Length: 371
Image (cartoon, rainbow, N blue to C red; front, side, top):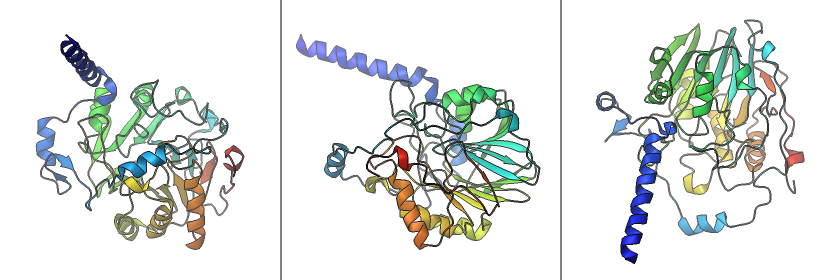
């Protein structure tokens, strides 16, 4: 009887998990066979999966990782709520057409105003980067700089990959009907269609492909990372970085990824960049091929020929084991040795691209334990 009871419990657990994966819209739909057949012709798609330019494997040292996980770290999160600078929605899109303004929403989310257009990059306005509201790390800030409901219209949304901290289901649902065009790497559009976005508004690109959007050139460039939102869809969609080149300013957005030669390749081909937004946070030696260490992030900014760089992918969530301020502090030390110009805006603070004056305060210091 005990064996039968255990079997029933395990069976119910499997059924429950299967239903959760099947019915939860967060997971989208599997890639159709016809799409996979098209992807099979691509150089960066092998054996039913997208692959990086360089061999990339997670090198997990289990016991060392376990030891680190249980180590007490009082500065793993801020010591209190991080307030944000509020954005007046009536000012959005009102700039002179020559000016370019970039406003940080925390982590890797940006509001970009360029040539009169309003563009959201990796819009993640949720409280937790998770498929459920009750699990996962909570955002450091109780409020965001801008209520997404107050955005009247967004000309374009640019997405780097399908991970929860970059592609947020509830955010996409709230934006639906307000967005002109979506730009994603291959396969990510399937999620958007599943969530109610008009297929005609979605533009999917492979690495090194470019598209013109209202006299703004968007180039889907490589990143060294992976994708997947469920248990069985790893690398089924593509991940990327983006070059956003306007008539007056040139911006690079790294998305997520480990350090590799693609940064120099992008810098040589599309640089120099007026501003490079460089992933810097949520790293660990066990997965450094997927997430750069801060010193590598600074080197990437140099490889890209960045006139000004900004470390991103930090300041909102704890998704790794390091202190929450380690990414920015280590980046700044290395950037100084490389003679890099770095901007460090507060969440909700804007950077006027191309200006000689830019935010450079150590705003995180009051919210750090023992710093």
